[in-house]
Length: 50
Image (cartoon, rainbow, N blue to C red):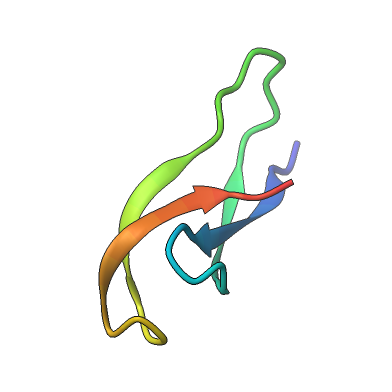
C-alpha cells in the first residue's frame, strides 16, 4: 500500500511550498508543522490542504 500525497500551504501567504506522503486513515486530522516559507522569508505554520 502506498500513501497519499498531500500538499502543505503556508498559513500566512497561502503559497503551497511542500509535499508529503501520508498514510490513508479514516479518522486522520490535518497535518500542521512549522516550516520555512521562502516567500515570507521566515518559519511559519504550514497546514495540509485538501
